Image 1: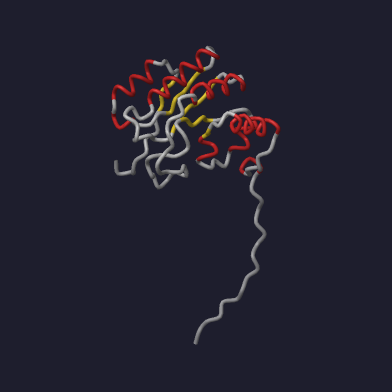
Image 2: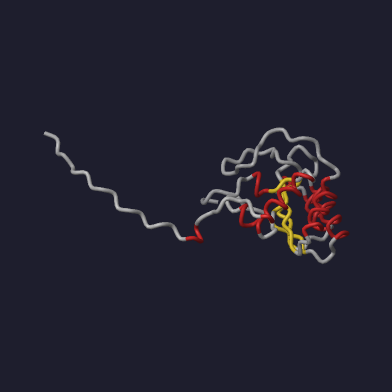
Length: 178
């Protein structure tokens, strides 16, 4: 004989606090930044990684520029960025990124990229050129670069460092046992 468990009405849920709710993007600042990114054919990690905070960040005029295209040569399971065979390197991208930074009047910028294992320098020369172009247009802007590992290529690391970023950063992605 099976035992019947009585149904209990669900209790009403306490609403989530306002600071936890993500609002749909659409402010004038957000739309201006989105328009500039499309006009200049630029990518941001905000869009490519589907960041849920894009509306808030773009509303405040901040974005993390993602250079070297929108397709990564690696297929990390935790990342939402597309992977596969990337397009050719766009040699004019550093100028467009610097133009966007200048247009937005940023005093601090973060520049990252997809992994480009198909390039001998991993894209270090494009990082360096983006730093130099930005300095030429907006010398007071602080520049943080969030670089890939360049597959351990020391010359590639030095190329980026020699361009003079204010902060050199790198994501360390590994499993807990390491």
